[in-house]
Each structure stands twice: as C-alpha cells, then as structure tokens.
Length: 453
Ligand SMILES: *[C@@H]1O[C@H](CO)[C@@H](O)[C@H](O)[C@H]1NC(C)=O
Ligand SMILES: *[C@@H]1O[C@H](CO)[C@@H](O)[C@H](O)[C@H]1NC(C)=O
Ligand SMILES: *[C@@H]1O[C@H](CO)[C@@H](O)[C@H](O)[C@H]1NC(C)=O
Ligand SMILES: *[C@@H]1O[C@H](CO)[C@@H](O)[C@H](O)[C@H]1NC(C)=O
Image 1 (cartoon, rainbow, N blue to C red):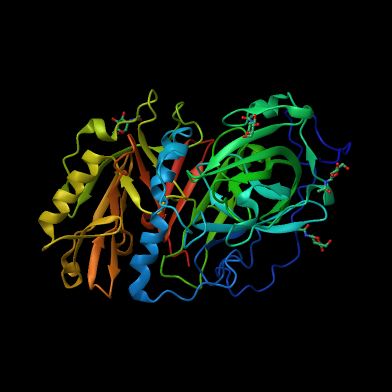
Image 2: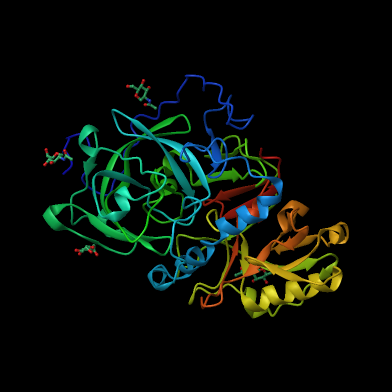
C-alpha cells in the first residue's frame, strides 16, 4: 500500500504550493506543433494513430490516404460504447462490443503528463467528459494488466511521493460511481469504454503539466483491470466534476482551457491544449456553456439547428432540447470520433443532404451516406447553429474520402441504434482545426477556426 508522508492534506483541500513555471526551454520536438515550443503552457495534443504518439510503439505506418476512411471507421467502432457511457455511466457495461483485439488503443489523443517524485512521464488520453485522472499502477492484477496491447506503462506508488487518501473522507465521497473503504483507504471501481472494468485507489502526488508543478493532485492508481484494457498510460480527466484536473487547479487555471485538434490526415502533427485564461484567443465567438445536473461532468451547449447549404434543416425542437431531467441536449466531447445526432435530427440532416448531392448512396462502416467522390465539389456546406454562434464546418470536417472507393461520405451518424440516447455529441472529426475554449467561470464555450497542426 501507499506510503504516508506528512506533507499531504488529509481533508478535501488541494494544495498548490509550488506553482513553479519551468524555465527550462522545451527541447525541439519534431512531433510537437510549431506553436508549442516557445510556450510551456501550450501542451501538445497527439493523435493516438500518429507517428508522434509515444503510446504506439512501434509507430503505426503512415496511413495511405485511401485508408483514412478505414482508419476513422476503426476508431469510430468504439463510439457506440462511448456514447452509451456518456448518457448513462452504468449502462455501458451492458453494451455489446465486437470481441477481439482493437486495432487502435482506446482514446484518440494523448498529452504528456509527468507524475510523482521521482517522476515518470505518461502519455495520457485527453478526456473532457471524465473527471478523474487515472494511471495504471504496480502491483496490477487481472487479465487487463498484462494482455494489453500496447503494453501498459505503470506508475509505482511505492517508489514515489504518492499517498493514498484516507477513507471515509469528503474527497473520497466525490468519486463518481461511489467508493468503498477497505483498510481505511479510498477504493473505487469504474468501467471504461464499455468492456473494461478497473479498481483503483484514490491518492495524491505531484503532477507536472504545461510548465507547472501541481502538488497534492488527486488521481486514481489502478490496481486491477478486467474484461479488456484501459488507456495504456492513463487518462487525464478534464471534465467538470469535483475531482477533475480543472476543479483541482481552479486557483491556477480558473476553470479555463482550450484545445485545437489536428487534422485526421496529419500523421506527423499534433494539436494543442492550453490551460488557463492567459494566452487564450480574446475575440472568439462564444455560446453559453450549460450544466446538466443529470450529467454534471459533461460540457453542454445549446445547439439550435443545422443548415445544409442554405437550407435550415427542419428539426423537431424537442430533439435538440436541453433537458435537465434526462440529460438530453448537445455536448462537445474529445473522445467520440464521429458526431452523433439523435435519430430524428440525423434523419433530417441526411434527407436534406441527399437532396442536394447526386446519388446513388451507399453505406461504409459507420457512414450511411456515401456517394461518388466526383460529386463532392457540389456537396453543401454544413453549418451547426449554436445560441449566438454559427459553426460553418470546413469540408474536411463534414466529408470523408476513400480514394480506393472512390467514395466520399457524409462524416456524421445517428446515435447507435440500441442506445436509447437523447444526447447529441459533437465529436473529434467535426472539431479538426477548430479551437474550442471552455470557460467555466464565464459559462461560455468559444469556437473558432484555427490551423492546429
Ligand atoms: C509498497 O509498500 C508497502 C508498505 O511498505 C508494502 O506493504 C507493499 O508490499 C509495497 N508494494 C510493492 C509493490 O512493493
Ligand atoms: C523528473 O526527474 C528528473 C530526474 O530526477 C529531473 O531531472 C526532472 O527535472 C524531473 N522532471 C519534472 C517535470 O519534474
Ligand atoms: C469493486 O470491485 C471489487 C471486486 O469486483 C469488489 O470487491 C468491491 O466491493 C467493489 N468496490 C466498490 C466500491 O464497488
Ligand atoms: C437555446 O437557445 C434558444 C435560442 O436562443 C433559446 O430560446 C433557448 O431558451 C436556449 N435554451 C437554453 C436551455 O438555454
């Protein structure tokens, strides 16, 4: 079990003693985005399938342009479980998942996070819809510990200044899904990606991220994994609940962060994550950030409509409505691959899109509106309307190409069929080369086009 040191808080207090801005210049990293080298608070966001991803070893071969659609379809295979777990965290375990080895690791983007003293760096999955950061720890039991591919990277709590929280405690009671107190330590169970379950101890240690040391950072030390695998080097939780990085670092970052995801085509490039209010775009269009008590960790926005070309798609207002009772509404997520609309919304968009593009239409994986790519010059622009803000999607964010096909597909889908979901999810593919800014204090989300690579 973890060592007890006297310098750590025993109650629901977070200490930010040593907020030392690292003066060490970041070494030139061929994989970092061009903007991240001069500013340590600009953190590289690395696509999991890219050349630069430290998790995949050896690095995956560069995707042939014609296989981009396959790549996206592979990645999107997990959307089903993801969307299910977002709307109902407990239902995820019941969702059937295709068995067999996943071609890609869980999660789509990683950021480098350094933990502990002595320290170790982990490439953690960036997840804005989960609160609690976790990392695989030694000792680890269960089939998920050794069978993982890529192999897990373990944090050794005994070799570090890690300290497990006492239980019962207020902090421990904030663990989403509940906790228990065997031997006076805070233990919790969680499912991930629908088919994996793990047990972890809630503890605390130093975290170094974006040029700052954060002392007393609370995270889960995973000791048992069953039924599948978890992100090989852990997960960085940027959700909105009490245990998220943002709430823990509130005094430092004021609940503000933004990210810009690179293009799916950018094998060699990364995007950026920027924590805190300093250096954020000043004149960015914003829409209100809504909080849904049914799912308080999620970033809800008020989507009011969708246009296909110049046509405002007729959508029953009920299908987009925000409902605190059942969690209905629209969220922005960093872990779902393809934007998912609830049935009636997607059906209306598809109907109008098909009206404006020459068929015939076929299906390919997650996509049901594929057509001859030579018709794509005439494909209509898709605009997502939010309260106070219109997001005109770049073509790259609304159409996906298969040159082997040669097909182009409308790069959106309905919420998976056997999910009784009321949630629209704005996903990665639609966020390529867009900066999304979250400001919990001002309760706004800013969205603007930016070249992220
Ligand atoms: C960690 O330290 C505790 C207490 O000293 C000990 O009981 C435990 O076996 C150690 N774990 C490992 C993996 O060394
Ligand atoms: C990690 O540890 C090494 C070796 O002690 C040290 O040189 C480095 O500065 C540490 N990095 C961080 C971010 O603390
Ligand atoms: C977590 O799972 C283990 C084993 O399945 C069980 O013994 C334990 O009670 C669970 N703890 C919580 C907090 O649900
Ligand atoms: C969403 O925006 C519309 C249009 O501005 C407004 O009428 C509605 O009240 C908003 N909904 C919420 C939940 O704020």
